[in-house]
Length: 320
Image (cartoon, rainbow, N blue to C red; front, top):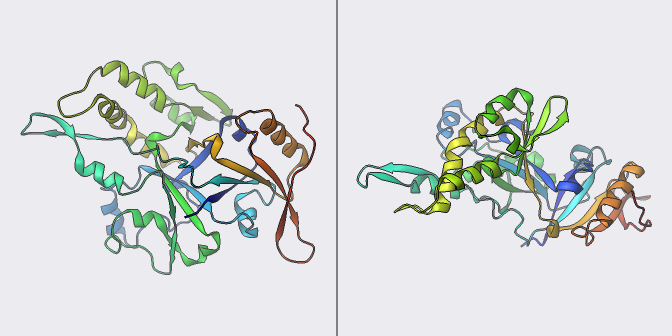
C-alpha cells in the first residue's frame, strides 16, 4: 500500500488559505478518450448510469517526472504536494443516498439499486489507473468503475492514481456568472451562497452546506424506513445533482474539495518558481499552526543527468 502520493499543480497561493483542490469533471479532462467508450450506442447506455455525477482528482506515485512538472505544474513554476496516502484524505466524501417510491409500502424508501450502483465507484478512495491499448467498452469490464480507471498506455509515465468524488459533495463550486441566476433558484436566500467574485465573470460559491442546513430545518425526524440523516442528504441530492451535472458540461465550472491539513506532508517548489511567490507561500505555511508541520523542498536541475534534485528549503522565515 502506498504511504505517500503526489499532486502536481500550478502555484496557487490561495490554496494555502483554503486548502481547496480541484476535482475535474468529465467535460474538463484533457484526454479526449476519457470516460468515453468505443461506440456511440454504448456511450448513450452510460447516460443511464452514475457516469456524469463524479469528478476526478488525479495523483501520481512520483514527484520528479519532468513531463508532469511541465504539463501540470506550470512548466516547473508550480509545486508538487506530497499527501499522506494512509490518512484517508477524501473517504468521507461518499455519494448521497437517493430514494424511490415503494408501491407496496405506499411510501418512499431508500433506492438500494441506485445506492449500490453509486457505491461501486468507490468514492473517496485512492485507486490505481490501469493502462491499455484498447478502449473500454460498455460490457468489457466488471462494472462502470473500470471506465474511470483505464487509460491509453501512452499515459503510463504518469503512474496515476485517482480519487473519484461525487459532484454533490464539493465544498465549493466555481461557476461563470451565466449560471448564477439558476443556482440562486435552489436556495432561499442568495447570501447563504457565500459568493466570492473571482473576476472575469467567475464566482466561487458554497452550495452544499446551505442546502444541507435548509434540509435539516425542514426534516426534523426519522421516517419509518429512512433515517433523518439519509432523508436530509437524499433531499439535497434530489434538488441539485442533476443540475450539477448540467453545469459540469461547461468546462469553466470547477468543483473544489478540501484537503485535510494534517494530510499534507511536504511541498516541492519547481526549479523555475518565482522566488517572491515562493516566499509568500512559505510565510503562509510558517504562520499557520495547522500547516507548520509541512516540510519544504526546492527542485534543482541536475548538473549531470536529465533529472531534478530536491534540497530541503532552509531560508529564514519572513513575515508578510
